[in-house]
Amino acid sequence: MGDKEEFDEGEIEYTSYAGEHHLPLIMSLVDQELSEPYSIFTYRYFVYLWPQLCFLAFHKGKCIGTVVCKMGEHRQSYRGYIAMLVVIKPYRGRGLATELVTRSIKVMMESGCEEVTLEAEVSNKGALALYGRLGFIKAKRLHHYYLNGMDAFRLKLLFPRPHVPQMVSEDQTEPEHEIFPRPRD
Image (tube, rainbow, N blue to C red):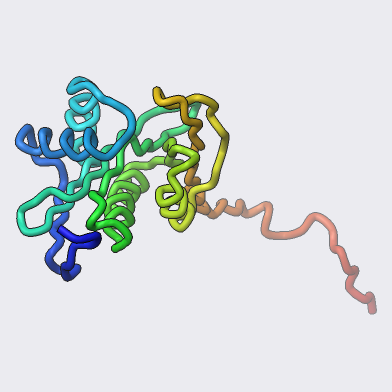
């Protein structure tokens, strides 16, 4: 296989986590592409509790990408969290990661999340650029965050708060005093 896999966008199939048969596919992708080792219990924690936040990308039946997320209460807010994102090398730079992340963020937003966070290695320029394009900001640097000793950036995406128009009561419709007095006859 060459550096980049040739394909048409229409050949990529995206699907939500649909059960135990998807778990080995996710584990294989993450184990081969990410620096952190995860146990089967970690994977099951995410995919069993938040299957609607886990998406997979397939090309001609082969799993080529995945995103694994969760959401829940965090310090008086409802927060989404992107735990794992992988697209195998021959398919990178073609918008697959953007599509996977966007799908999970959409579900998080629709579920009432106020923000989304994640960690990315400070040396992972591709991930930092991707999340920057999606509107994430660097919230903090985490020193020696990963088992390999690398630092991470905590990235955060804040959702705009919906504007709720305030009801005006009848007694608020007339000003108590006039700013510009009317001329008197």
